[in-house]
Image (cartoon, rainbow, N blue to C red; front, side):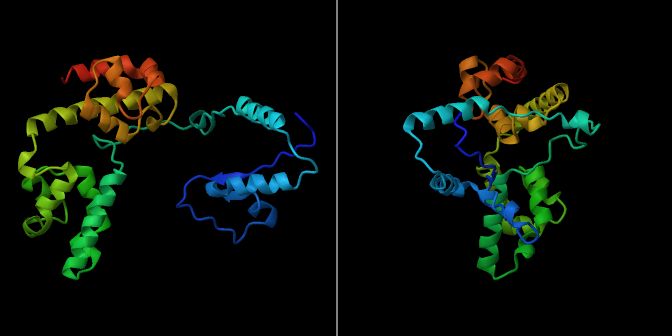
Length: 251
C-alpha cells in the first residue's frame, strides 16, 4: 500500500444508547473514540489532511486490502483466565426477552397514567422480571408469582397474560405449550453442551430469540431450517441435523 496514506486508529461505539464519559480521558484518547454515526465524518476529516487526492483505483485497492486483512481475533477467555462454564440452576435460561420486557413496561406505564398511580404500584421491576421468567398461562400460575394475587389478577391479569402469549388466556393450547416447553428445554440444553464443547458463549450457537423461533417453527428439513430467522447454511452445516433430530421427537 502507499506509504503516504495514513492509518488512523479509532474505537467505534456501535450501540446508539451508549454514553461515553470523557471526564477523565486524555485528549488523545477522546479523539480516538467515536459513535458509529460519526464514521463518515471521521473518514472525510482524515482525507482532508492528505497532501494529495486518492484515485478511485487506489481507494478500491485500499478497500480490498482492509477486507482481506480484517480477520476476527478469537480469544479463548475460558482458558486464559482458567474459567469454566457452569450451567444455570434454573431449568430455562433466565435472560429477559427484550421485546416482551418493553411491552410489559409500556402496559405498566399506560395503567399507571390511567389510574394516576406510581409505576411500582402496578408492579415493580423485579415483579416485571418474574412475569417474563415465569410466563404465566392462566390465573393459577399468575397469582403464584410473588407480588401478584387475586386483586392484581382482577385488575391486570388477563391483559398481562394476553401480552405474554399474544392471545387470550382461555385460548392457550396447554398441551401444545407443554410440548413447546420440553422442546425449548432440550434445544437449550443442546446449545449449552455445544458451547462447552466449543468453548464459546451459548448465544454464539443461537440466541434466546432464535431458540424461540426454532420452538415455534419446528423445522424438520434443511430448507425449513435455513428459512428460520437467524439461521442459514453455515449453522445448518454445524448444528442443523442435530437440531432437526431433536425437533422431530416433538412433531
